[in-house]
Length: 108
Length: 119
Image (tube, rainbow over all chains, first blue to last red; front, top):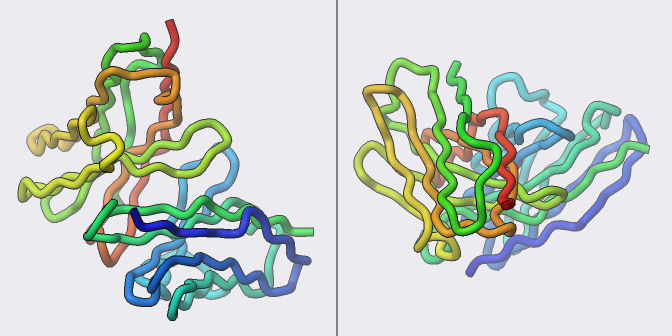
């Protein structure tokens, strides 16, 4: 089955840029979606189709995808960005919907 | 704006069947993929399955033998049945919706409901 690997945790100072990776074989050929989940809340879609933002998501959130790694970038990080972030793809050949294990973003 | 709300028992006995319903606040469920995702305490997200009004459906291979997801378009609801449950099925269960399961991700989520499997 297709596997997505994310670092367990990333720490960043307020105002700096956070880069969260999501590794998968030839992930650049798939459409990657990113979710933000704060404690006690449902996940929130922040990036879809590699780099598109749903309505209401700040421009500080951006995404890219190439080769074996997709990246969620959060610019000018704020305390309110502290959350778990999950990547997700559609893989029609095996497990259609696959989630990464998630990265906990800590704002120092 | 599409809103989703899960409902169902919060406690299920081992070997029993977990049944949840998701009510969708939109005029029509047509054209969307509707599905279920769960999260064990302190763990990541696990996809269970999705269905579409065209009778297209996809299930997590590890759960497929125990899962049924069905739509009731007239009630704007969809449901999850998970049979032969064990303690490992204890989790927060989310219902979710997507315009395109491959290209759009799950844009709509319920608040989640905790289901505990215990005698």
